[in-house]
Amino acid sequence: MKMDAASSEQRDAEVRALCGAYGELLDNLTAAARDMEGSDRLAAAARALAAVARFVQGDKTAFAVGAHLPLIELVKALHDLRHGSQPALFAAKPIVENRPADTVSALVRGQSAAAMMILEDAGLAAGRAAAFVASELAHHRIMQPDGKRTGEAIAASLVRRWRDDVKQGKASRLVVQSAHAVLDAEARRQDGEGRGEPGKPATIERAEMRAKVLIASLATWFAPSR
Image: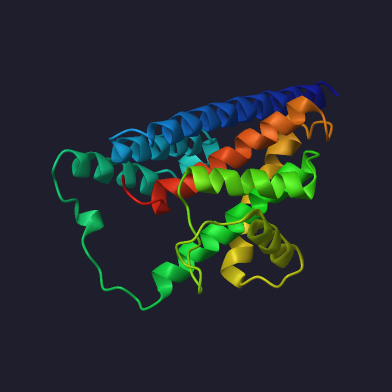
């Protein structure tokens, strides 16, 4: 029994530490997203990446297998790039036809759909959730990534359609993978912190913050340079 109690206390401590680290990660990513409004967007992106690297380093299992090392290499390469060097990591490679556009489209569609579902899960009506995501996309100047309306604003109705396609299994594999990666991370967060009561202001506020971070992460890579 003593062994079980000690084990339970250790697990509780690990969960609390993970929740604290996740909260710190969100704070850092949110701050980096705000910094993207400034002139040194590369520095803001590097700070966001460094925050993710620190979060991964904080997990004993991930650290033991070196899961953080690719992120560290990226952080160092961005640092060199900011200071005028041309990192070997960013050497130009032959472009595979259509692939970059496909990947961008999948991320925009999948993460937008996931952000809407997170908001709905917190208690927002579908219309309000779609409008919130569309507003954040417009704020970060993220436009339709492909199709006949490429470059046009993303309407709430389109966000809602993307969400429907993911839920009904009509979206492409890349879109579904992008959405589910976000939703799986959200489920793990809720396991640690608790789900919160849907419809409560605090629950909705936390969901809105997570949706903002998701959309801001898209802006880091896909929004046009100012």
